[in-house]
Structure formats: C-alpha cells, structure tokens
Image (tube, rainbow, N blue to C red; front, side):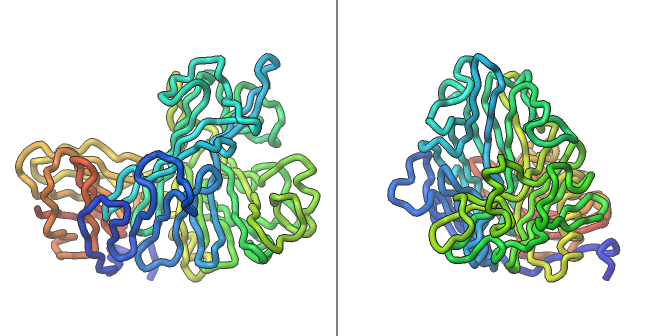
Length: 451
C-alpha cells in the first residue's frame, strides 16, 4: 500500500493504563526506575532507567556522562552535551556539562502517558571551573553558565530533548564552532555554545567497526531524499548532505537511532577534533576515546557527527534553547525507515491543525518542545471532540494531548472516526491530563474523548 494513500493506521497494541506516580509505576513495560529528586545517585549504577512496551531497547541516564538509548546488545546512543568556549583574551576557556561531577538527573514527573526526565549541571572546564562567571547569567542555580535539559519520553520510544542554557553571553552566542558552511574552528566569532554531538557508547570486547556500519549515517531531507555517509575514508569537515535535517545512525543492530531538528538553517557535519584524535582511525574507523586502537575491556565512546541548528529555537537576555526529536526505528528496510522518519519529522514540525468541535475547552496551540497539543478545560463539560486537518504533508503521528485544568477524572472511552479504540494511554501530571494515542493518519480525522 502506498503510504501517501494511507488513511488511518491504528497499531493495536492494546495498551492498558494505570494511574500512579511512584518511581516504579509500570504499564506494560513503560517504566521509570531510579531517582525522583535532584540528588547524587550514590551507589546506583544509574540515576534513571526507562523501559518501553514490547521493545527491548531502553534509556539510561547516568550523570554526567550518559543520557540516551541503548540497544539489547548494550550499544548506547546519545546527543551529548551543552558546551561552551570563549576566544576572549581576557577570559579564555572551554568547558561542558560533562566535567560537572555534581550534575544530577532525575524523573521530574511521570504518568502512563509519558515520562519526563530532567538533567541539570554547570558548564565547567576540565579543571572544574564554571565558565563565564564574570557576567550575570540569570541562572537560578549559581554564577556562570548552567544547563537544564528535559527529555519528554513517550511509550513508542520517541522523546523530545529540550536544552536550556543560562548564560550572560547570549548577545554574541553562536551555535557551533565556526561559521555556517565552513570547517569547524574556522573564523570563530563571539561565544560558542554547542548542544549536540552524536556519540555511540561501545560494548567491551567489540570494536567500533563491530557495532557501527562503515556507512555510519543515513541523512534524510523532508522530501524523502537520503544519502548514506561512509567513514572510510573519513569524510571531509563540511556539510554532508544539504538540506538534510534528519539523521539515522546505522548500527549493527535491528535498531537505528535517529536525531531530528526542524528544517532550515541546518548542517550535519562529521565529528572533527585535533589530529591526535584521528591517529587510530585506520583501526577504529571513527574518532574514539580513550585514544586506543583496540578495546578488549572497559567503556569507550565513538563520535560520529554534529547536527547543527544554526538558529536558536528560543533566545532571551539570559537563555538559549535548542530542541531535538530522538528515538529508535526498527523497520526492516532502509526505505521504510526513511519513510517513517520523514512522516514523524513532518508531524512534529508541521503538526496538523486541530479544530475544536463543541465547547468546554480552549485550544492553546501545539507545543513543539513537548510534541503535544495543549488545551485548557473551561467548563464542567468533559467530553472532548476535535478534528485534525491531516494530509501527507502534515501527517498525524501518535498525537499527544496535554489538557490543563482537569480534575482527576480520566477518559473512559476514545472514539476515532466513530470507532471505539482502547489502545491509548492516559495519565495525570499535576492538574493536567496527558493522553497519548498510537494513531497515524494522512487525512482529516475525528477524535472524541468521553469522560
């Protein structure tokens, strides 16, 4: 069936839901285990672990070094970290959250519909000094540059990573080392702030080429064009495929991690560092730390690329915000994986218009940072009726509702185009109700929640 002729596909996962907010609340495998407060993880192996229904990949949050997805084989994928540098002669320096040994990760809130994990730390030099303390950052946590991150994680394994940096250097902040269209470190101006690096965390005893395909990346544009990027030879330090804004990593696993940013002002470049980091490239294929040619035991990390969004998602006098859509895909062919990610990217950046039918609610808009339609209850009338104006260019993919001002009453029935379905998830976050629906549609679709 041609995917553009698809009308409605409802994956009959038959999810049930349970209310609760304990650190081990579970519904069919969608589970958050670990810290629920911003404290040191102590003797734990990790701060937070997230598992998913009917999938054997998971997420690990382990401050300050890891926050990302892991395959069943133990291969890790992450988009690390907030980083900064200055070329000012009076205040030179380079640092990142990785060097904050007091960084914390915890489950900020959770429900059967989603988990929200938060990560906080200071941007420090390798010697432990916080950067840019000589200007007021407006940070609620202390002097200098700090970073807050939120991961809005949904039952299908898709998450939104929101990075917020507090700094007094927003006026001349740039989103990468150098200038658009040029090699890294060329013509650096202003104050550098970096928020994404594609890292693969290795498995002891397996070498980087054992877990990563030589054609390590598939880069995808919003119109479905794609290109595989080989790392043998190592690619040059420039944009690898314009105007790609979707990156898929080709692991030697059934799972392929992806990173998506909104289209426009985007470059995806290979990871580049000083020549000392390239010296083992004939054996490792990819830049890998520790700087060795062979890994029999212990952890190691291979770096693949930078997904650079040159324009900040949000910028204020004291904050910089970037947003990424992340997850894993396991479709059997590359074309199917590409098609799925293009539809997901479109549904996120160009979410179908929501039209309210009837009263009792106010539509507050689509929140890209949460991948959610936000509504407010305005009366005691509970039933919610909406219509989505979906199409192949604005597909509806697993919509999320964040409904404010609700009491504890939960929906008792979900109708899609007049047909009752039971495979949705509902949960409570404070006085909000969250609804996640595993629904894909490319035409106008009616949805009713009956309370």
